[in-house]
Image: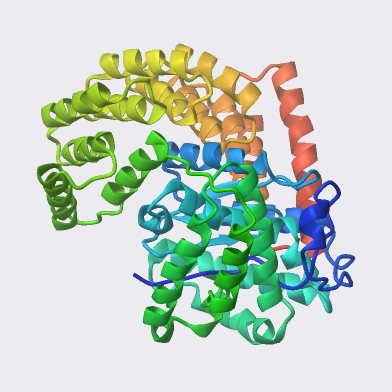
Length: 491
């Protein structure tokens, strides 16, 4: 398993109002670069990279795992210093032990990291460290010289890194990386020890205030240090942007002496998602069998942290092996071990019904799950997909419109809406929905093309056409701005 860490910060400290105690303990790394990349510009850069990554399919859109990650992240964000920019976590399917921050508050977490962490506090410690890079605006602070060149180089490195994460092949993304590597090797975006210590200290403060076990941070970093030593010669040097040094670990351990001990039990969701990701990372039939054997051995020996999670994993394995009766049996065992309803368990129950072609059963379970967890994204998607499989498109459309009113930035909702309109033969509305999906995925030009198709579709009344024309005007203006700026995104 390769230890890979990517770009998430560079030099400088960022004073934060209301976080005086922490700020006083941080080194002063300089403020000269802050004017080179404003928070708004940094956010725009991050959004463009995220749109490109989504358009290329780099981000792993496993709904239950992503939902857990952002619920968990929201708990940490709630304890960040006042004035922290918006932070969004996303998942990459990769067995590596890694997490990294993009410009603008976007933080990637590798599936391998979640699996390898031995407690939820360990996972929180890594996520808090990355939040430290975001809060201190290390990327922006590193832009000290030629801003435009820095932005291009950063975007090239990050997109190349995402390509590697997507394929698992170090040669993937080589072109993007090579174009920017010479600049990056000598730029102020290279990580410094001071920046890493700074992110540690910010992260430690958040970890402590969120009520997690702070001893998890140095314990996990020690394991990372061992992994780095093992794999250092097999990975490109520029990937080693989070060197875990004895000095850093000692610094954190010194802070623990002044912190009250707080033991925090792992949540059920943490254990369920670890089991889920372990199963979903199996890419071959044999790997899936090996995962099943490992889970069954844990049941036999009694060596497991959470019995419900083991049976959840077995249920998911059996479903993938098309043993739906066995999947239901294992899921019943999960429910017998869990006192309260859980959206991850409910989501798997719906998946089993859908896989077994019991669409009516899936609709009923998804409806019940949503009554318990009305904000659940995974259950919402499943409910619509089940309605669509049952050809109940008017109900699906009504539900989707309500969802879009609340979650208007979710591209998947527009994709699902377009499918229902297509099934009803409503081409104007289908193209209109596709336009919004493509726009949210970062392709302004494709969105314009879809609106033009909608404009030419039959059945459009004055109000519908006026709405399309207004949206076309907005997107054409945005496309013109992108062309003027020389941006390669939005294509």
